[in-house]
Image 1 (spheres, chains in turn yellow, green):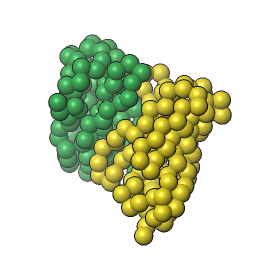
Image 2: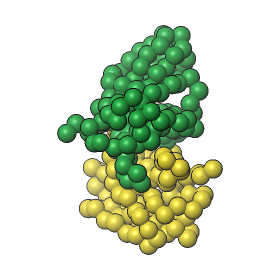
Image 3: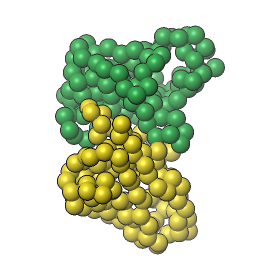
Length: 109
Length: 111
């Protein structure tokens, strides 16, 4: 059974700092998804990583995938308050996705 | 295009009552999914469908039923509500191998 683990689960960081969220998955997968969820809202797709070595960037967020290590990272550069949210990674399992428990990010002044 | 819509947004049920959560998509995707989200637990797959007339169980199907008579609609039925079914329910849709797009969710409380 595919297991997806994120760390940290909670992260409080100051504005302007950099940090990385890690996503490990237990079985081979050639795809990895990142989603963002604001409190009380639905999930919004951030990135789809489709191959080993894939790197995608959007604003202050950059995601990468290492399929050999079964590891994806979401790097936050110069955090701003608007990035406060919960971030989920997910890996395909059959027809659906297995989600990590999410990383709750709080960016403070 | 509305994407994925869900109704109702909120609902309070008494133990033993039944209800149907509605999900409709206008993205012409074959794949549809129901997840539940409990605090701090990520999302768990309840049921999924790969096309009209085809459904299958996910990780946590007990207490739920689904049907898929059209490409657009994928309702989720709770027959005998229990407090353990208090959760936020999300419907999602995708093309094969593609990104899943989520509806706004239904917040259900069973008392």
